[in-house]
Image (cartoon, rainbow, N blue to C red; front, side, top):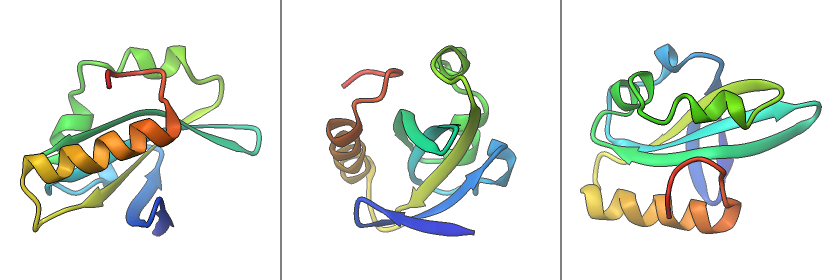
Length: 102
């Protein structure tokens, strides 16, 4: 299961973070309400599955979603943290998610 968005290939979107892989990458937390998909958070991690499963902002997600929360990631095995942060910042600028910081 996957899709392309912002010129990146994403794995997901899943209704549980359990389906994400334990790999480095950039994750996007979505809210699907009606037919609309809204980005509610984005971040980067050396282990996407671990980070999303134990996220310190996970209480923000349901407060900003009146529909179903979905999880996706683009994996970046050839990038270090600085490269992942660049992708995260680009997505944040394009989507202005309500959770997290710029």
